[in-house]
Image (cartoon, rainbow, N blue to C red; front, side, top):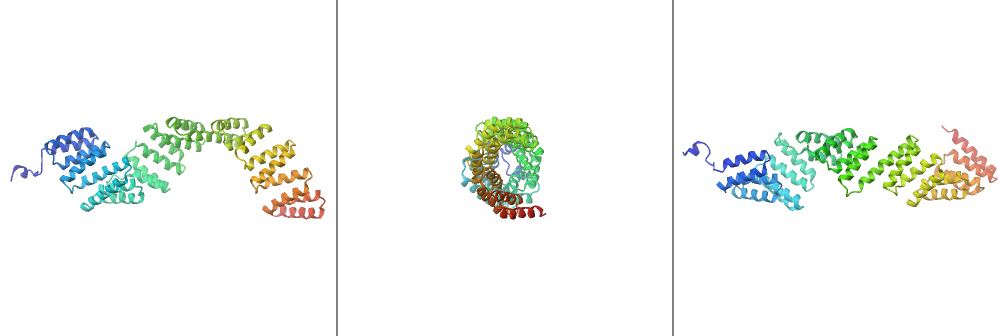
Length: 437
């Protein structure tokens, strides 16, 4: 027995020391240094499969997938059943598939994983890599099954919880998604993609303040990530923290100047602020100022023009209100609400002919608009068009047979038209309906 056999290292070569040093450098992510170290080992022993495998892993770390593939191929020429190298080559091919948008390389990667599992049926890395290749191909359900198999074989397996979080998010299982992201964050607490994913899931369950905290952590790691700024703005908007929402949207716009969607978000915040001032706080002048900000960004914002018209009406500025409602119908000729608002303003100003026309337009735009029918009917009574008024009250009764108001109004029109007996029947009907609990 020679001294090498006696030491238990019959297969040891001069390259082994460099191979071990290179592995240590890989563990510290010193990829360039590791490549040089493995190269020195290969200068001593070109047939050292472990050095080729190690160099391939270093190229993987640098995302130089073509060079990595070459190294793993050399390792497998020397040692065809080298399971780790087979699995690593699958990883390199998957990287090339993503880089070149070549699905065929993903399929080749899956075949390599299958080969590795034939040689070593309990090899977690092969299950993981097959799952990753399937994920890249969009086969999410199957991918997660393989991740789960790897975890079952090896409880210490580094499960891709971030992918599981995305998978569960897409299934709308938001609480489970949050649990998965929580695991992922414990492993990689500064990964901006994971932090962003957690924030998205928290948004879906209404935990907006918590979501903001994760978006802020994401932005700290990746300040130029516009989607995180966008969702931060959305969360602030829902929490009625409008100034902070606008600031977040403006930052998103700075980070992604080629997109126009952030301007719309800013316009919508001003619109919400305007409506709050208008409908909840009764601050009509302030509402107009906010709505003007919306219209400055989106000049054809129908709802902003409509709300601005309501605000002017509340202030008694009927001419300005009418101008706003006219702007609405210029943009949308079938906006029954704007025609109805204009009709009431015109009626208030004794412009009865135009008021009738606007009520008719409201009904044309929305044949179910019974309020417009009722107002028009009463206006027709005032101008002596009793038969026409009766027709509109009948239309209301067809749609709302239990409307005591419509029956009474019809009675008034019949009475004005000299049909007293018919009118009395309508009044009786209105009285019975009004008394019905």
